[in-house]
Image 1 (spheres, rainbow, N blue to C red):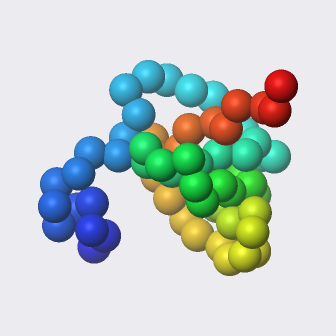
Image 2 (tube, rainbow, N blue to C red; image 1 turned 60 degrees about the horizontal axis):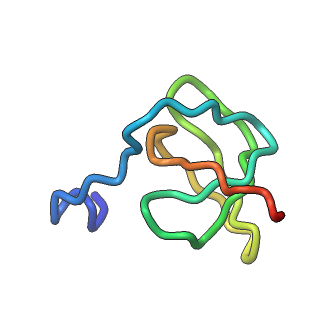
Length: 70
């Protein structure tokens, strides 16, 4: 259980977005941390933190693509 579950914070995005392997995403509403998408399976994604290299599994609905640098 995460802090979002305990405090009933809604982190899911309100719109459809195509998340694919190789995308850089963030989770929830914060701009950081950012993750590389390693794999996609159904509604789950395997993420790797771009700064620490640590891995995580998350619901795809919590991922938002990071806009490419201008």
